[in-house]
Length: 339
Image (cartoon, rainbow, N blue to C red):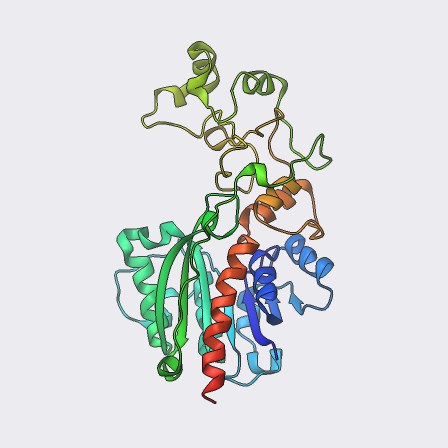
């Protein structure tokens, strides 16, 4: 019997797909963006995808909505945007974060009381507002009856050819803590590189550089950046960025086949975070970015090319999600054995 899960802020399905591969059955996925929701329904017509504002869904009778009684759901997953609030730990519970996306995630916890939850976010959440934001989140998780643990995982260590760090918070309902435990997945021995994925030649869905930018990028060797070309050309391209401090290693950055990708972003062209293709003088295509995120090739993204880049860049890498999901299954198996 597959364990049942509900996912909020599902995006294009990176986390959901990885959890499915780990053995979870999704009884509901909530995603407000129409293109992302279309991607979910296109690839998994059997999934119960709600293309609605999570605030509206959270206000409903969730037991009736998803056909499950309070306390029966195995896993609530998702990653709400959290940097829109910060508080000095007033300990007002859910009132601390009313009006934010995290409030609705916490409302699902409050109403459904799942056995476990998986809350993923950016590493920067740990230090946002000097740690007070994450402190507020942890307080609310505790107040809702959960024992939590958290760890930053780098997807590169879990079969993903990309340096991408995510904060993974796991919660277990207090009445179940004595019956189980959770261990984060062990890092793989081999960490994949860009040469391990299939790169496209003249892809259909790919952003293009301007003629002038293409001419400059052609001067940058694989693995290089602005320091590897004529300083006068680099200075003219960088404009005011030339005078900034720091290494500025993301500017005019061309990746190499012998390294992992840098974090896949939601847009392929930003002056300070360029990621040029290692072989051709262009950004990575939508499908190449999807492969870097370990989406299978039969996962088809819907919407405009900009929407597709955004969906891929916002996703949790499927292989990382699967590894975490397998550990969640182990925890739920321990709980099941005590029933």
